[in-house]
Image (tube, rainbow, N blue to C red; front, top):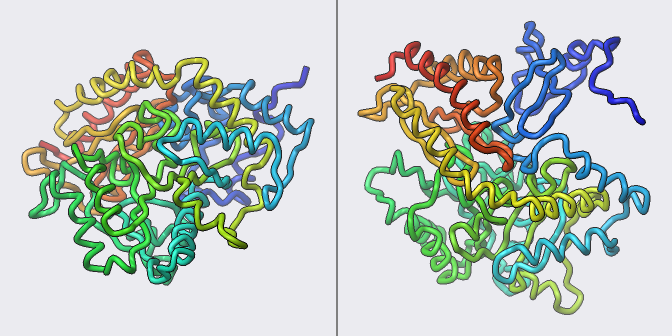
Amino acid sequence: MARERHVDAEVDYQALAKRHLWLHFSRMGAYDRGGEVPIIVRGEGCRVWDDHGNRYLDALSALYCVNIGHGRRDIAQAGADQAGEIGFFTTWSYAHPRAIELAAKIAELAPADLNRVFFTSGGGESVETALKVVRQYHKLRGSPLKTKFIAREVAYHGTTLGALTATGVTGLRTPFEPFTPGGCHVPNTNLYRLPPGQGAETLAETVRARIEFEGPETVAAVIMEPVQNAGGCFVPPEGYWRQVREICDTYDVLLISDEVICSWGRLGEWFGAQRYDYRPDIITTAKGLTSGYAPMGAMIASDRVMEPFLEGNNSFVHGFTFGGHPMAAAVALANIAAMEDEGVLENVREHEADLRAMLDSLRDIPIVGDVRGAGYFHAIELVKDRETKASFSDEESESLLRGYLSQELYGRGLICRADDRGDPVVQFAPPLIAGPEEFEEMEAILRPVLEEASRRVGSR
């Protein structure tokens, strides 16, 4: 039997990490100044352990990925078994059985006529692929001026130069400008902080207004998440998606449903579009497709989008070396089969109300301004004054989130996300196998930490 290998006592992982590992979205200078890199070495179910033996409840699914839970050797074994047949072959003009089987399975689960699956290595690549395919689609159909994309303010769609066109978070865009032009933005569905003059019933009409302002002949697609991540789990108001779909149809604009987070059960359905009953032309996905056991994503396109690429000698001149990797595809198939066999989506539907009730129970703490979300994807917005909804300055937010909340929650054994891409929020996306026991553990940590945060900032 192979020896379990978590950490080698003779290796100084901290020193090696600080010297050589460039962490993503991280202030690396903090580690040079003596901060310790959190090193996670093992996981089981909804919990993980660090190199000191400390246990944590992973209430973020390792960045919205590990839907099936940690430590599933059967899921990983599917990739190892596939390597014994063929470890890698490209899908550039070739195919292999696992990519074919996975594409067919995704098409079976996807809504409407989304039957064409283009594999990628992750979410950013999936969005990049979608933005490129809609531009070429319109060119092939004789509308070469259709190059613009309409997204929502504060929305995050990835960090490639193309995806940054759609990303609506200023701080993520400015360091890399100029980048691919064409991105346009409209108000998001933050119903807690509606823009002046807007009501929930008018938000979709801002899409129409922006299309008309830009010129319908120049707009290629609208890209939105079913529930918007950045800003803190903004849910759509009633009828929003039906209106957006109708607007897109009116102006010959494609609708991209960015479901890198919201697919594979996160909202209690295979796809977020099914939860909110709308028909996208394209879905972008990743993360939960493999539950993070292998890097993989996909763009799922409708038969309509595929049509011009089937004519004559046309082809989509785009690809990634590892798109549709056999081992990743095998892992994805095993992950989906386990979710079906073990009733994972049913578990989300059964216990979504329990998660929401736990978070709503924290509303008596003055700093808790709003609780929102859907499925196993929720956020708490933090405020200085609940009556006026007054938020925090940049300096106050820095002190609150990074100076206290993030460290204190982690130190008490809870992994979640304290974020201020917008107003300060704490986000929760536990593995889809979680239930009341995990929610009670979350509440036992959240309540005292939020109460202390409220005292520190003088919220009322």
